[in-house]
Amino acid sequence: MHKKLIAIIMMLTFALVAMAGTAVASDAKKPKFKQFHSIVDYKFVAKYAKMPKPKNAMIIDSRPYKPKYIAGYIPTAVSIPAKDFDKSVAMLPENKDAVIIFYCGGFT
Image (tube, rainbow, N blue to C red; front, side):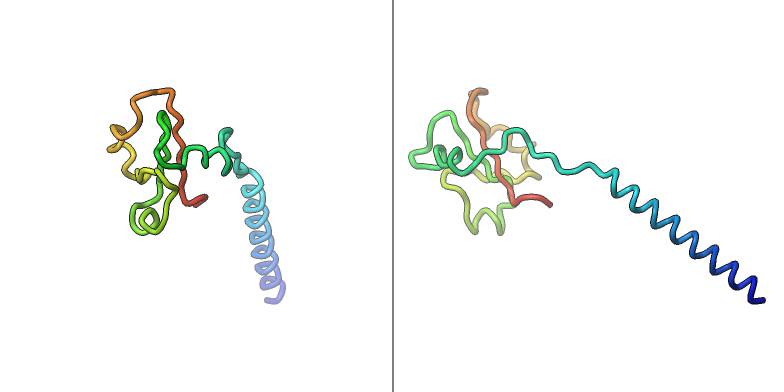
């Protein structure tokens, strides 16, 4: 009886260790975050965040309008929440060479 119980406990322990090993291996295969090649800094955005709004530039706040945008936004920014972007393409500049700066709430 004890031999069977010990054998069952050993098999369960082996199974748990094997499952834990595959979980660690799958975590190691997850790609690391890679920054977008054109992330800009404060100095770059500040050139366009002033009144009167510079020509051929647009700042887009892609956060939800309520409560994020109305709580505060970069001057001259236009609210186009990410979920509504397809419906709002008419708001984008006609000039395809215009500078477009998107910002959001960060990583999710």
